[in-house]
Image (cartoon, rainbow, N blue to C red; front, side):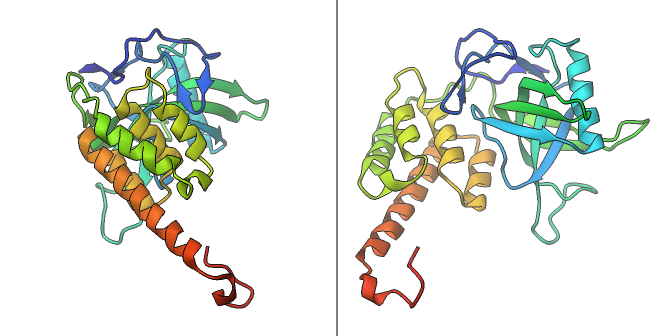
Length: 263
C-alpha cells in the first residue's frame, strides 16, 4: 500500500527546500510505501509530529547505516529516498511492543536535507509526514544493524481534515493574550494561525510540537487520528497553561520562598 501522507497540493522539493518557521513547504508529492517495512529511529519522548521539521545529528553506527540505506534507495534523490519513522521509547513499566520497549504510535518522516560529514556521521533535517502505528517489528538481521517495522497509517489518505474555525479562533485568542504571549513559541504560533494558506490541522500539529512540552500530551497528539480531538487537546493544554500563569502572576513577590520564584 502506497499512500500520500500529505494533504496539501504542493510540489516536491529538493535538499534545498525552504523552511518557514518550522513548517516545511512543498512536500506532498512524497509517497510512503506502507507495503514494506520502514526504518525506525527510537528516541525518548515525541521528537516529531506531522508537518514539523526536526534537525538530527546521526552518530551511532546502526543509525548511520540506516541513513545510508535510506539514501541508497533513492540513488541520491531525496524525493525517492526511503522514509524514517520516529518512534517513542516506552518508559512505562511493563509496556512493550514485542521485544523492544516502544510505544505503538510513530511519526513517519522523510529526509529533507542531508549533510554527510567526513567522520561518517550525518546532519539531517527530517520532515514529519504522517501518523502511523507499529503493526509488526522487523528486527536487525543479515548485516542490517537497525530496527524496522511494518506500519499502518492512523489517518486514511481520503480523510480530509475539517477547517475547525471555532477551534482556530479559541487557540488564537489564548496565545494572543498577555499571559501566554510570554511563551517562547507563542509569536510564531500566532503567525501560523494568521496564515490562510495553513489548514487548521497543520497548525495544530505545529503548535502541539512547538508549544506543548508535557510528554503525555505530546504523545496523545501523536496517536490521535481525529483532528477535532487534537484541537480539543491543544486548546485544553493551552487553557491549563493560561490558568497556571495566571496563578503565578497573582503571587506577591513577598510571598515567594526565600531564594525562589513560583515559576
